[in-house]
Length: 159
Image 1: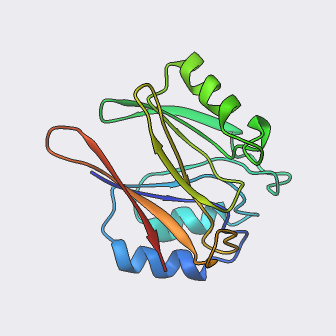
Image 2: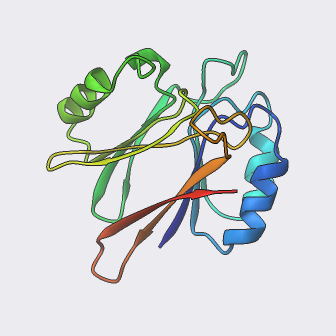
């Protein structure tokens, strides 16, 4: 199973279109917020099931604030992250994931990619495809793959 994880496109979908052409086919697309009204377009171009949550710039939308679901054997929590102060540190979102029994928590908001594989929980942030803030400022995304044994593997990718 191949999952594309993105965030913070801010209605600038050109890089998402490029990524989809580059990595397709995918089995699932996860968008971690700040789509700014382009959620229907993203679902249309993804060509697969999508999970999309609202971000701090997603006003007047029907997107959920967060979502919990299962990917393979993993309990996943997705959120934009701004309610958990991820711009300061990951302590609160880690605590929240552990409290809910999540194996993986995915968030955006910081526009910086992050992958922390821990004993109890994996934290990941794909960064931003539109406005990256990490050194070098390259648009980023994460590919998560579940192998034949159901084990998750992650790759941070850059355009």
